[in-house]
Length: 595
Image (cartoon, rainbow, N blue to C red):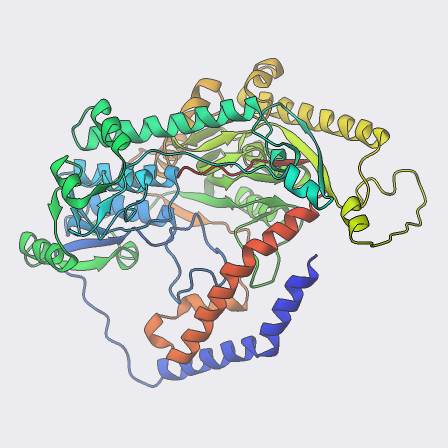
């Protein structure tokens, strides 16, 4: 199945992508060293921090290689919240002006942004936001939830505020696939382990319905309560507006959801008038500025990002692959390097993963245990998702932090395959097999599992589930029986996971950082140096991040934007093909989104 990916990659190789990249680099270097030194803009004494919330805030270094193309590297969520906290204590920064229409951040990420905006405002500094429209007539409650953290909200008169209810839809393909002679054959441990249900069921199972309702209910309650507190309304009043559906801008103003109607130029003019003499500065530039009067950092904390699905081995070199996957070999090297570095006092592992391979998860788990045995505290900060295999690699940590909306848990396992034997018969495709050993066709897509195969799979899943729950009990200081009650494949919101004993504290990366400082003998306000230990090596395409958009000729930029489009088309397909090839026990959670 990977053949298709290599064919597409070959097409790009054929038109000279590498050659073009080298030429662009040489041109850039020639222009850079022409004897003319570009002037460096002076740092203004009065700054309004400009924040574009529509940017794709990635969880860590890397990301899809061409997707969301820009010659400027996307800011990480952690860089963003650290910069805003820095601005809170920087006398030069007088305010934040943000723009937002359709942010791509997850709900837990929104909560991290909300928390640091609240810190900024608590320091007596205003944060104002402009939006052309939030949802443009459709439901966008999570978007407005993020906007509500700002003290002054502007919306274009023709826009809307999509404050509406949330929900999710699940599709069940069993009968549809049966028409074509295709069958999903899977075995799972834990009645809540619903990942294979799309292929095996005609409707949602009751355990799946129960956990999904609980998760969405938790999210809905968090958003309603947050909006009510921000806008000084009651929760019942917010729910009443939600029941009405998206509000036109004037309606939103009358109901107290926003503060001003106006266009972008009017917003900018109002900001200039209010903060006379201040200059706008992009958050990316501000993040690189030194902190005036700050003392030197006395200790270092290693930061490792575990983002994406988990698999064994190394990373895929294809530019069409999703680079944010967690590959066991480079991840183990990153953890080991941080653990062996005598200058690193502790490790923060940032996890945003729905899981994947059991064996790969276990390999990473072992390296985290070894880091702890070497005397390095390991603190986990969970992002939007840290479930199944994502929870497996988090559970040995000394302390686990999750945002209220984080999806976690899903302690369970499944395995199986898609069977296409009847489809081949319908298409008059004959097949013959030459085999040695009764178990040869066990994972063949042309035949279903035999009773003997099912017996073997059940023994494998029993052992895997016992290992998962046993290690969870060990990491969380509980009995296996206590873990089993909250396991069985069930997902939990971060808030509910506290009660289930699966995480220790609610909070984002900054909360985990503050705790880690105290763990190594510092005050939460002391400075530290964060050292990134990446699980990805740089490839030739990474030279792009050293360019500014204005440095590149239009035709070259157009080429790479075309490549970006191809990546958006083919990367999901490549992920699906890779997932279809997965064999063995899988610790994976089906993604859940609120719309």
